[in-house]
Length: 403
Image (tube, rainbow, N blue to C red; front, side):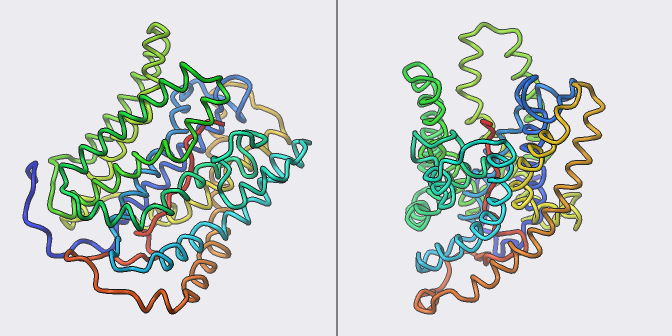
């Protein structure tokens, strides 16, 4: 069992982090379960008393993706890379599948729903800047779930600078900055709820700036692990802590006073972020030690690779099913429908990945402007994991769940 603290820097860090790729699927499925069961009796395709209201926390599965994005970006960081090459890869990584899924989203959220299309708002979603504007119509325009990609875009824009700054900072200062940022998330949520209207407060809490501490948490953990920091933590521990927190959170919401419940709501994002970070570290430490487990199995890795496409289309499919057949009765039989729909969405996700996402990204990378590639220099002192389509280069994707 590794000891807490710093050890000698590993000579070689793993070039694949398959367990993290598999974890993407579970985070995306949590978001899917949230949207499927909805936030009450009037939303979603059907509500199962067995998992509701606990399924609502699945919307915060995107918090896991934000932390994971920061971790993996820092894990494969190339300090001498031209920023243009980095931005070029990010475009090829997220936009092709996003644009295809947007067509389905416009049909599901506007045409099939018989709603008027506000084209300026939809256009903002095409370029993934919809979170920057408080007056978009509706609140989540275009493909609703891509509001989280709008958050990602800010992180991508800042990362070439943030990565260089973080790589030069002592770990203890990174930890202090991360802690201050997470406390700031709590404070902003409290302040916005207390002083702004509900729609305005909702926009503030979707603003990309508010989520930067979650990316910073991932970056800090990646640097700490790569520098030799180890935490004596088996994966089962943070996973159990997460499940326990979810249970206590919803039990508390049903039993505690309104002021206390409000504080629970203000702290849920930072708490989920910390627990997500612990889960990531626990599994990465296993892989650094050369251990393999269930999450390294090929089927789960494949589901993880398809998870971005799954995330992009799952809510559109659920919406269209609701329009077609109406909401199902609220009973546990709806779980079978949810699993069946997940199978269908996964099949469609494979197709989107295999015929759009992967080939488009490969073509795009092959056409990186040579003037950016020529500036590549040697990597950092530690072993650098190249960004590849083997699951190590993960863009987050998926979404917290205010829908």
